Length: 201
Image (cartoon, rainbow, N blue to C red; front, top):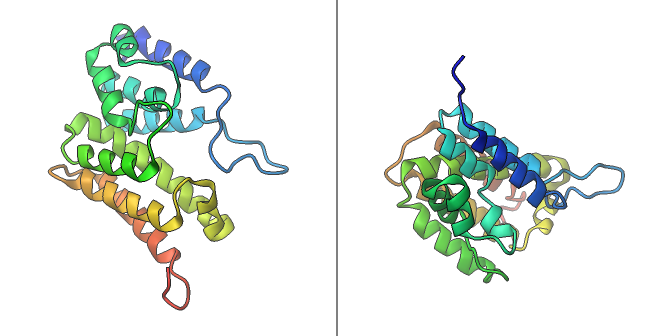
């Protein structure tokens, strides 16, 4: 039987599991509830990439898309050596920074949006899966706790909504995919849900 991927996929999963072992999803360390390991996000993004016909390099990039951004002491050269230049190029593109400590939030997000517009389709697929999972998680939490969900982020509620709206439009620039439509729908629901009864945001 033909293998659908090489041992590099397992290597990437092991690297991510080790690197993110102590990290959890923001806002999930609440009383009486088991915090959600950050690894769950990486696995979900990789699963969605695979389910949307991503190839091995895209799956690996999905597993490692936050590696350079969130893990200090890492490098593009390391990823290129272990997984090839296409993977490392995608991971760099998918990172809003590879500098530690990170630059200010607005600066990072504006830079990411600008480069996302012109990313190749293979990289946009990974980004779309990443942002779709994040936005879906925010919406699920919003339905449970309301606007308090935004308190876990560095950015304000309005900044967060602005970011996801801009990301959606950047993804849609010269690229059509059902994932973009799904993301646009979730972001629209979040925007409407964040408007109070008086119409103020």
